[in-house]
Length: 120
Image: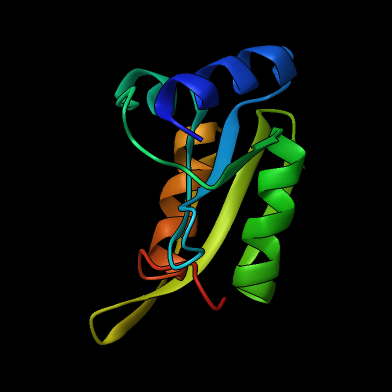
């Protein structure tokens, strides 16, 4: 699909709950996740894309949980939802508490996959 076809496809599928896009090249040698709005802004109309799948917050959380396992937990409390994330930073293991937001989910996913979700 060309960038223009991808845009038309997404516009036809998109609902208010879709926040993320999973996309891949037609050669199936590259897979990535992005914030849907950012993806739409950065599309080159001539770029060839193999396909797209739209994801909700729950869909992306399930993907982060699949990759992060016990290192990521969704916490519900009086302040709202947050993510408790235990990860390695250099030679130290630390636990961060992040807001349960699309950018935070994507950032955790990118760190957990080392920016390369293929084969994960």
